[in-house]
Each structure stands twice: as structure tokens, then as C-alpha cells.
Length: 274
Image (tube, rainbow, N blue to C red; front, side, top):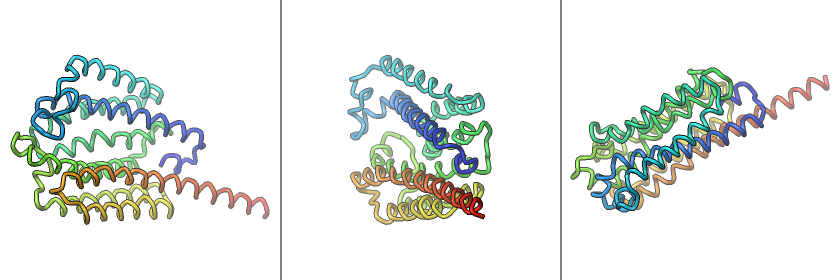
């Protein structure tokens, strides 16, 4: 979105997309390692997770900690490629990432904490590109991501609800119960609304609204209309289908950048002719 706003060169955008892609891959992996360390005893009691390396004993906690250290070191290397503002902002996410696994023990809303942790990059992109933050754009984008996480991770949590209710693990799947579809419809609508707000604040054009907004809304509506919350396999399929949401949002933004570039180029050509 910063590229669209400031008309930054494609080379800078591609570089940052690559950097953020690598960083997201590394830090999400670190988050999974932290989660598996905290949950290794719980995972032993759940059929779907009992074969995870730590739960099964294939990997020891010490080995996992060493691996986590390598992941965090790699993540720090990526982070230090950014400006100081972004480094500080990025580092503040570690506290949320670290405590997320504990939340399922104390609250039925651990998915909110996951959303706050996993979508932190939405706050980082703008300052990484420009050096300062436009909160009126990045915060709606961030909250759209948090709402999205509540949708897909609640669907994911429905896979384990029969085990979680027995062993005392909390989740929005258990909290929402038979009203999950209604709750997720609310969060889906909120995600779309936040995307619209971010687009309005950043002055986006029709490609963003037709692909990122309308495409996302349509896909979410399809998910919620067809998902069977009592079918583990279907919940897994719908959870994995959420990758298309990310593709739609990114495609709309890139399409808008291309449209704006083309429009500016045509305007310059007309001016030169005049």
C-alpha cells in the first residue's frame, strides 16, 4: 500500500516483498516452534498432533530450543535490513508471539492473540518502505488481518474441539459452539469493512475494491456457507483454502499499482502531446 501511495519504484517493492516473505516464513516457523514447546504435553493427548516431533519425542526440548535460536537469529538478520523505526516496531511483536501459546490455557479467545502476532507485518510494511507510519492505513489493514485470523483459526480449532473440551484447552471454536457460523460471518464482514477503510484512507481505485475487497468477501461467504464444522477433513480443507484470501488481497493491491502506473503514464503522454 505504501508503494501505491508514494509511487515507489518496482525494484524497491520487489525487494521488500522478498524480504518480508522470507521474514514471515522464518518468524511463523519460530512461532510454531514456540507453540510446540509450550504444547508438547497437550499435543500428546490430541490425535491430530500426537505425532509432532516434540510430542512424539523425536525431537527433545533442548534441540527445539537450539533450532528456535537459529530461527530467531535468522529473523533478526532479516529485520536488521530495515530502518531503525521498523526494527523497533518489529521487535515489539516478540512479546505477543511468545505468550500466544499460553492464551489457550487462560482464555477462550487465543485466536485474537494469534491474529495480533501473525499480522504484525501489516504495521511494518509502510514504515519499511517510507520510514514513517501512516496509521490511518496500516491499522485498518492490521485489524482486517486479525479478523481474518479469527475466521480461519476458529475453523482450524474445530478439528480438535472434542479433545480440547476434555483436556481443558480453550478456543473460539468451543466458545462459539453452534453459533460459530454467525460469529465468523461477523468477523468476515469486519475484515471486509476494514479493507474498505484501508483502501479509502489510501485512495485506492477499482482494482483493489473488485479483487481485494469483493473477491475476499465472496470467498469468505463461500467458506462459511459450505464449511461443515463437525467434519475434520472439511475444516482442514477450508483452513487451507484461506491462502486464496492472501492471494486476492495482494493481487488487488498489485493490480491497483499497475493501474495507477498506467494511468499516470497515459496522462503524461497526453500532456506531452498537448
